[in-house]
Image (cartoon, rainbow, N blue to C red; front, side):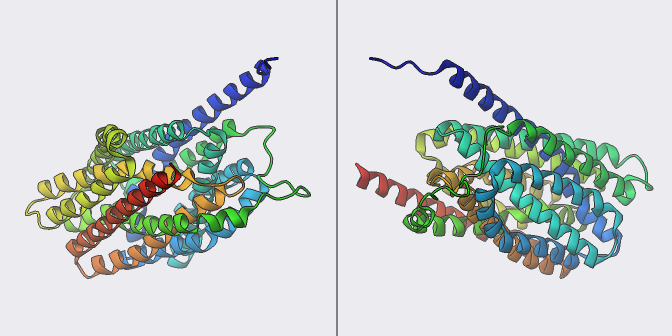
Length: 413
């Protein structure tokens, strides 16, 4: 006797998956709009209230350090509490801290608020990735959704930077002091949480229900200890290499390339478009040559592109090589996210994503101090080259991961 599937449950699941996909992509759009404005003006805002590049490096480093320390314990707690509640709590907490940041001027206040914002950001990223992994079990489908999310984020970031250019023309009392721009980014951040309400599955509970037998989490983690260690090292290198563009490129553009604020905005627009183009160019190659291998060679190429940037004689050539580097860097980000979820056992998804995020934050924290110190000493080229060296090491780590994966599949066969 053949049992027919429950069409009602299938329909409900398909409806939920559509809501998850739609909510995720929309939240990525608002995330890109909010963070593009914030990243464009925050370091410059710190400078206008009297905090130098070294102080900005301390703010970013403390934020990333707090995330690195706290993300794993809170990720494990997320698996117990429930992925969806933590996703929404952290999303609205992220927006709340962004609303407060424009109203403080002291270094200590920014250290505190940016640290809290960073904690919410870490939990938001960990929980949303874990929600996607729990809802979408097919690895290729999940990888494609991560790619779509990155494209949505980067495209929205470009739009946000265009808005930042327009805001820069409003006047010194608004965009000139950057408070108005940061408030606009905070309002957009509120919409991240609103969009993610659609991702909440009403019947979803915690991954581990109190009173019920717990799945063998520790044995699962021990069995994948090598994978977790490799993931952590890779994330450290990727985070350290990428934070220069995320947090410091505005200081490079204004203080080293001597670009006007409006030109900075167009540079960031080109940055996002180059990143989207890199994903579309390299993604088909990943299907044929293996995602980890192509990501590895892309990161190795980033070193040479950054050396060309650092030795460029004109701002135009610096920007050209920098944009090509961004395309190579962002093409591998969906690969890193998918790698974190590819071997995560039930009840450990948030924890494994936490390991990845802890690595990114730890690498970003250490690199932020180094970049801030180098830039305060006027050694902008040294900061660019250091980022390239970290890209090279990340590329080599990707290739090692690819080799390990091929050996494991061969052993399984």
